[in-house]
Every structure is written in C-alpha cells, then in structure tokens.
Image (tube, rainbow, N blue to C red):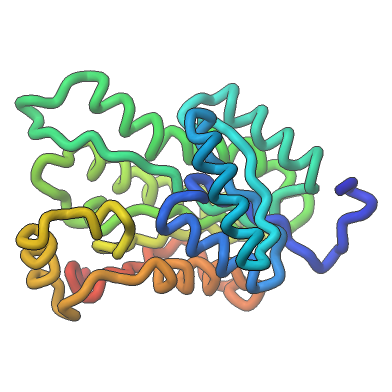
Length: 254
C-alpha cells in the first residue's frame, strides 16, 4: 500500500507485542474500530507469528505483522521505517511488548535487570522516537503505553519489572506535555492480572490465591484491556492526556 493509496480516514495503528494475549485483543479491537493494524513480533517468534496471522485471517481480520526487536534502538528505527514505507505514517502506537525475569534482588543477575529494562522500558523510547516527529508535523497522534498494576504498587521479586513499568508512566507524563499543544495524546493503561495463556497455565492454588486478592474476584479479560486502549485511541478522547488508567478490578486503588 503506497502513501498515495492510503485513505485519509484510515488510521495506521502499530501494536508492539501484538501477538501476545493482551496484544491480540488490542489488535482485534483496533481493527474493529476501522484502523489498519500492524502487530509487531520478536524475530525469534517468526513461526508463531505466521500461525497467529493465519488464525486472524480465518477470523476475517486482515491484521499485518512485522518483525522487530524493540529492545534494540537501531532495530526499532528500522522497523518503524519499514512500517511507514509499506503502510503509511503511524497514527496510533501501542507499546505493549513486555517480558518478566522474576527474581528477588538478592538472586537477580545483571542480565535479568537489563533484559526487562530494555524490553519493557527502553523499547518505549526506541519505538516512540521514530514516530514522534511525524505526529508533530501532522498534528495528530495517539500513544498508549501498557504498564502494570505492579508499576504502581510494586511486587515482591519484581524490582526490575516494577521499575520498568513505573518508568513507562513517567515517560507518559513527560511526553504528554510535549505533545499536548500539537494534537498528540500520550496515556498509560495499567492492567492488573489478566486471563492469558500464561496466567491460565498457573497452578490452580496459585491462581485462586491471586483471584481471592482481587475485589471483583476474577482476572480481567484481555478484551477489557483492549477496550481501555480503544477509548484512549479514539478521536473523541482528544482532551485526555498524561493519565494512568487502571484496569485491575480494584486490586490497587490510588
């Protein structure tokens, strides 16, 4: 699709971590809202991404996929260049890529820290930076950073993850001020525990212990996180920027 062929009323939405449990729901929701969606996956997940794309096609969803190591600055820039050359300027960016390397600080190795910080926090800069100037020039942009309740309250054994997720919202608040007068909104969504293949694979007793700590007595559905993202991505949400929207069933109330 060339830039000349692009319809002016179609937004280009990019979702990093797009083939994960939450990312998939976000991609589905954004395409249902009329956006053209590109899901970013790690290059080592090519086989999984191809199968994921085929599954989406069987659902009747024409979601595009592209490989990119968002934890690497050069790769992030190359990935965005490729997306914009193929599909057009990015209008909506959802930074959803994330990993965990849980250890208490006593047992945490440097690579555990750096892997999580690079993938969960540095990636937000690496991917947002290449789309930012274009958004400023066009006078429109939606950037939504997927953080976590543990970035708000902390979590035992997750000093790396909690620090990265807290840092994401610091980035949100600062960048929201830079983009506010230019038609760009920057917001954070902080999910609590979400029903994904990872949480569904937990031992029953651990899962039940988690659920019992949530006032709503259940985990979130991925679609509920996607609904919050769609709300913040909408044209009508132009006056909402710099917020941290919790979607955690009352697990943490601030």
